[in-house]
Image (cartoon, rainbow, N blue to C red; front, side):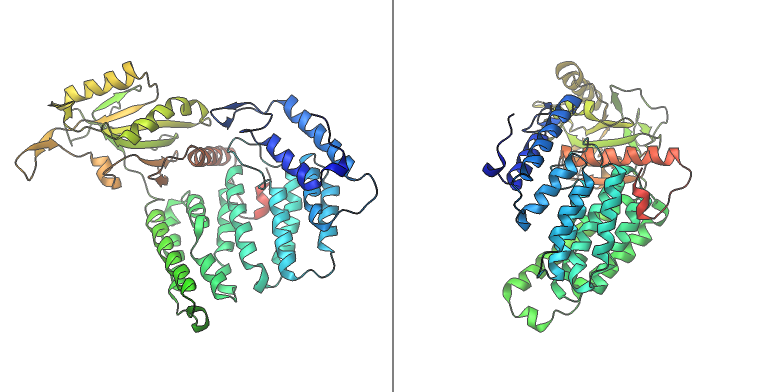
Length: 463
């Protein structure tokens, strides 16, 4: 791709072109089903060469760049690891006459995200930022923390959330927890009511914090319950009269309170031992040895065997379940080492228009999934005995595993770590989100295996 002369394009245009070329869904890197698979060295080298050429062209002519172009120039510099030049651009921007503390907070937060590598589209398989980038990001973070509490709050909350996620990608659970504790200490110092309740509602930061904290089941519930009580106190506190006079403000409060309670329901179900899988039939896997007394031929598969598992739950009459199961045949090959898929299905008592016995139904399911669809990942089936119902008929005994989890439809998903702790649950299939969690948990497991002690200081994020 030829370089466009500098007068014809600004640094903002070059930065946008860089992001497009670096994005696997529309750039120069190989893609399978819309996702990055491998970044060939030749592609990376070619893009870096372009960026260097573009950046050199921007400095020709001697004219000082407009302050709004400085950050895009810094982004180009970070791409090719010209960190001194990137910092010079940011310092020039921060030295602009007339900037307020709010302006500086915004610039610093944006700069931290730049050096964290979070301003471009992210995929769980993307490389982590090198240690020298994180050192620079932490310097900007210290400067953001030094600003007055009245202006830094929401920016600092966002950065602490980003820091949690990045620490988890490195497998530094204690570091992620430390950042989470910092984030949720911020509502107490907020001077503005809307800022306080915005942070107190938690957003995705509460989910990320729960994911990190659930690595320690022995203290998860107490810590989460205490945090929920504190955050709920901020959200339910009396609303200032000046704020309440506007209907749209009241609508926002109502929405934040409702969203918070939904997140509470979610985080209160994780951090506990996941129930063992109880099933009667096991496809594409060895049949577990432990017997269950719930039903004849029922076996128990413990989940504390060192394997990180994404488990889907559903039933044959669920179209969305079939869609997920078909995607999983490919998705299983994208899993990080140490992770596994397993789909768990409950019987319905019939096949087609005929009522049939459990063993016969399990045979039909085996034929359909293994022989017809050629699925190769593990599938467990609960084909329980039929029991009387309130209407005088007979229906399959409901799966004890799904009943314990509160799953009565489909599809539902949980992710369990190698210790058998439930770390994530959702009723929506998101390949990117679940691959992110699987990657974090397997990285966490490798990190804990390789070291006997972890530190809770944010600087431990660097590998």
